[in-house]
Length: 335
Image 1: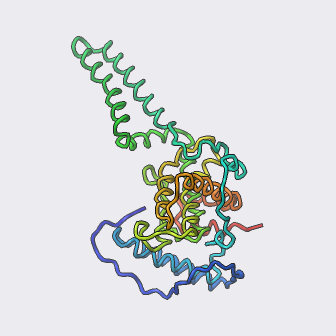
Image 2 (image 1 turned 30 degrees about the vertical axis):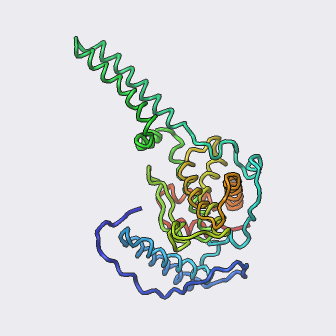
């Protein structure tokens, strides 16, 4: 996400958008003429333009206009699928681990289990490369140069292993960069982030931005939907359900495509933050079941809207804007 770091005040444009109160009732589909749709989508694009120009300190404030524009477009019939999942949501229930196979998760036992693939490959590469280089330096360089060079190069492995054991976060940048050597890296990231974007759209969240760049793989919209900082309020069960599905949608998408889920650590941390804001504190067992249910619900959503998911993946692969991703979702014809 591009951020303007110049400390200036950006005035919010006057809006003609009326905020629409969310309703749990299923309303009849609203149709609009091409001219009306063009007007509503035009207003939504204007709010995105204002949001992009806003400095970081005012992003949250401007997200309210984005939410209002989505609500107006939905009410006017311009965005038929925005919030569609909330019209007939999946009720929360106890979900057993094996049930995740019903929604296409290949290895349910790997859900919520941190992957060590990238870490192990990085450390093995460092140890092997430094060991070989140390041996080569000792054999090629003359006298003391060969002795001290091989000693110093070989000690790199111990330094890296020591940091990995005590402060693993310091190595994360290098591990993330190294992980890009895997052929499936970019495909995984795009599939993961496309699932977040689609799930957020279907549960009625304003999608403010997304990124598939290393260390910036995020789709942002949770607090924009609440119009409150997450730490400032408790959440209702309905809000927790929607936010939980968004949080783990990427996990479900990876689990449906691959045997091992790599990008789940940050998502599980987001889910933990959401569950901690519940009006009634959840026990450890309830949190574990909530995680399984959220993955089950997200998997169900992705199977139901599989064509839309693939369409967003294609759009993200070519660097499409948020509005282009929205158009890709809406353009898919439902059977």
